[in-house]
Image: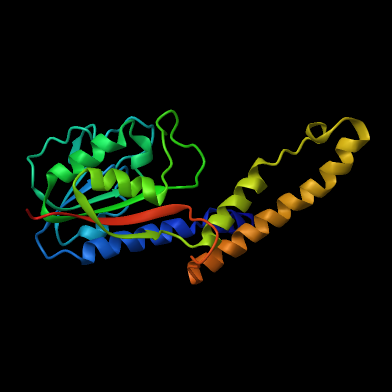
Amino acid sequence: MFEQIKKMWRVNSSRKYLFRFAQRAGASLPNGAWVLDAGAGDCPYKSSFSHVHYDATDLGQVEKSNGKLSYICDLNYIPMRSNCYDLVFCSQTLEHVPDPNKVIDELGRVLKPGGHLWLTAPFFYEEHEAPFDYYRFTQFGLSHIIQNAGLSIESTEWLEGYFGTLAYQLKSAAKALPMDPRVYGPGLYGWLIFGPVGLLKILFAVLSLFFTRLDMRSKYVSSGHCKNYAVIAVKGKS
């Protein structure tokens, strides 16, 4: 029972939508096209590009498992000629580079004319992979960076729905609220606050699971704010 609860707690609607985004990217390509997975990490989306030539690159500075990388490099300087990839896939990577403008310029350089950049980046997310975590992006910031690199935006959308953002906020609160009555005040006052807070932690955890499941069924984007943005851009042919 405990293992089942832990498994449910690890469910993340963002992962579902990221895989769906990668599958759409792969489905947009003909057999034999060339793809670069920029910031690939452990290459979780490789299966979406099984029908094309797939290159994966990562800097490899964070202590985590990496997939079979084609080359290890800084995304400011990709060791490939210009105009060689039909599609560049860059997921949850842009926040980890010190100069995102240079990186988008470089991704644009290796794209063929008419090639596409498929990119996701966080708007609302905790610091992670420290100390290599530098930015969060609004849709307007992403548009500014991408267009300055000479690419045209074809679409910008929320990766998850608002229920996903809400599930993440509730999960963060359930984990972060302290279980020490002294934090809430001295003596009896701290204990009086501590009781309801403990109940709230349980309620937030349950609601997080509820809204995660709801987000996986219904992507609601009419109000609230998103957790991640997903952008598709194209390199001009001229």
